[in-house]
Image 1: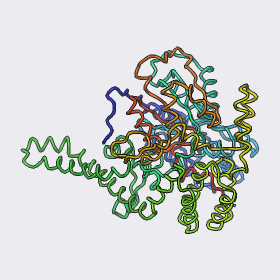
Image 2 (image 1 turned 180 degrees about the horizontal axis):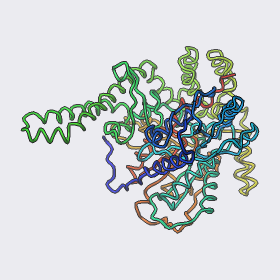
Image 3 (image 1 turned 120 degrees about the vertical axis):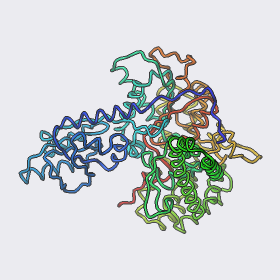
Image 4 (image 1 turned 90 degrees about the vertical axis):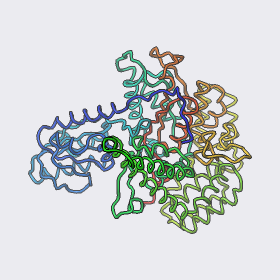
Length: 616
């Protein structure tokens, strides 16, 4: 629409190769169990598997029936059972129960477990404990990366965030390193790797180990630079309401594995319909990064253009009509169908958001980001809690208040917590513990002596011990320092004139001009400076763990090839569609192309839901 791409922007690599590799490996593994077999698939692998190998492909390789793993006795009559699962102890225990039940019934079957993306020692230990280690064969399907679109690749590991950042369990860090290694071996060598965050540093080190163990082959690089970032570097961005079209569709309809299910309210029938949302959908591709206020105008213009294209057939002779029908009509009908779907989806979004007092929400969020009228914001949150509007939305606003204000005053914290527990149940006490542990919802400490002490230690000493001390202090304090970061990086644009959302001037357009996402601003600054030089104060406020490494495999970082302008950004712990839109905008402005690799697509609801512990 209003965004013109720079003419010199480079072409993206072809990521369909990742799908082909995954499909070929899966077929090879299935053929290792010759003959007819039933396949049991873990629920959260069904959508990703569908993008790699559909049912007919599986049937061609002697898969007879497909079942979802449901943790109950099975009804399969096949003599060969194959299980396609994530390496989870609960699932392995269930497989052991299935095998032991067959043993008890005197039934002989062959069992094969395919772990994806890798198997963990703990799973094999369970097989051994349960006495069926010798009765099953195990394999690994190295399905690390699923391309969701031309520039989005997902590891489809939504649990990464909770497991790594809350539980401190680093089991998936090596998986992230292996995913990076796969991209490096197919599209590298990378000329420069930047990163920030503890998890990013570990994933980088894991990848380097794998590179050193493997063979080095000289290739023409298709990706130049890599930026790794932890989700806990920037919690503010995923907690903000999304207002770009793709983000809103995700917030309201939940995009799953690049696919959305529109219900009867959108389809105007009694059936739901699944739609793939990617750049192949020409209507969606033009509005996905647009602020929602521009979407209706664009769709009505598109409808007029379509009508004009249909009207062309009037006055055609038979030969022209034949050409029109064979070449254009099918495309026009497809576009017409998609256009009516997106118009209905936009209307549905409007209805839901009007009902939810969306404008009031945005006003409160913008006040929190700017640090104005905090008492009014607290009153709005209290009213929201007491009216029991939405359990998740209430928590989201509480977390946003806490992060932007560097923690709540003790009396506010106690009052808001008590009101929340009264409204939504005391079984949320554990949820508050989780949020405090992550620094998302904390109480200000009297006098803030810790922070003063921490900054003195940071300034006085710069050796390794000081680093450890500062780490210890920061992990105790878990401070967000949002205000200081906002001032230093100009995250909240100060302007008197109206922000024109039709012609965005910076990445803040994704939040109606109120806030530039911290994660994307960091990426912009580091690429501009070719490292962290000059950002020392920023990294100190973010608790460090930053790094910048030049590729050691002869890749010339100054080579002005197209690859140097293709930047791979890896989010560990999830990434939002708003951040992807902001990076696309940045790419258009600076002549870069960004490829976003993420452990999973996230949004405020998914982030908060992953930290809920109300199942006491």
